[in-house]
Image (tube, rainbow, N blue to C red; front, top):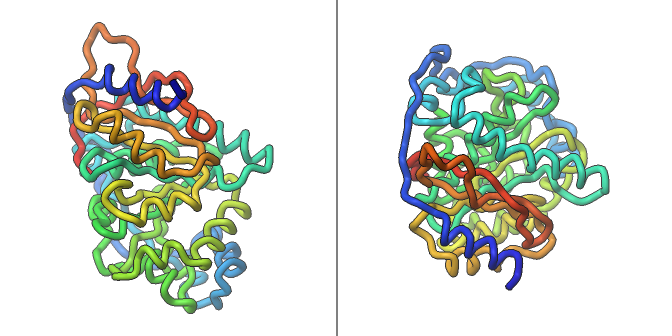
Length: 322
């Protein structure tokens, strides 16, 4: 039996019904507030100019900025940067650690794109967007890392709604479609100093072709190579419901595969993961699993090379649907 089969079988045996707990809120007041302010870090500007040939625009030196709705996110059970010792923060602290270690190790060895992390699932509703946003918020607590969150779920784009971004905000699709638009034109600063966001952009019927374009490949390669200390998280469409996810996976270095406890069978998970090429680092995250007081160890999450899975100890509670 292969390592992936063992991991999936373990998930099938260990997954349990979900429980949820929403922590109380004590973070600063937040809301949507678009302003223009300098991007003190010049985040990704040079990379974009080099990779897609976009001419500098008026927005090159001034970036739109939003105030993330941390208070609302915290009330929904998300990680809060203002409560770094909460239960959910500790869970994601354990989840992000192997991801960051893989970045440091693989970048040192010259492996491509380890800092490009895609979060996906087999089907809608297993918790991929919840997990992707939590990873972003958890990594934002790191002292020596910056994080770029890319909403790449072109069919639903629920991350933008949760993060307080208006639906008509330009984003990734616009950059891929129009050569005169660069990442610097759609990049959003946030009130968290080391967090940037690229919205999904305006819906497009040729989304799959845009993701598979040479422009997309050049952009991803340039972002990964030029800024190895940046962690770039992609909220991806579900693997078995869209064709975009498989195309996006080809550009990634690491993939976090979210599995809803007691909903998705091991065979379905194996079917989805089999569509990912063998050169990717894949981790499995068990979501919506119940945690008992006597259960000191949790199961269903780990990382390894290709389709291998290491021994994991992380299970995510809660009942997030996206």
